[in-house]
Image 1 (tube, rainbow, N blue to C red):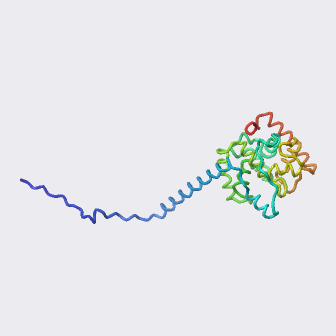
Image 2: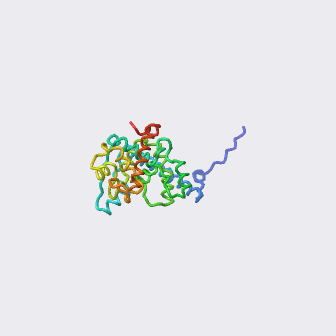
Length: 246
């Protein structure tokens, strides 16, 4: 009777012995860069979602101006308590295509380039990102972050919320932030009582709030206010205000 040959068995030591891993610096760096990118993206989404439902308590500009001046004028007001003409005036003055773009107005950007960059091409959405999440000083880092966060803001916030936050954090005079404080500061009325002309005058100071006064307008500001009044009426008629009106 033939005896079967036994297969050679590995010793316990050789069986449990594992091949040591080779450290690969490039793979390690790639792995951690991917984790950091995913973590940053998650934080960005959470930050944008947070202020969709919670009013931003402050901004970098409001905080720094409050420290410099020893306090600022500001009170939050919901969009429902702002005169509708003020909403339209802000859009007519700063971003007439607010309802039709996804965060960047390419026509305005091209116009700014053709004008030698002497005029701004930023949309209201970009300004909200800059004011709420970033800082004012110009830099490539800030512009890159603004370019990444703006589409996210557009995707996660309704247009009315974007405009509401914008009007509550915008600077209207030195130490005067938000449309509620601005309406009372310049005209002695609440934001719900603003007339067409008052709303247009407030919107006209937005590009340079420290250099313009809504209650003592120059000839240039009066002309700009008249243009804004026409623009606010136009976007109400042609549907470009539909995304933020009740």
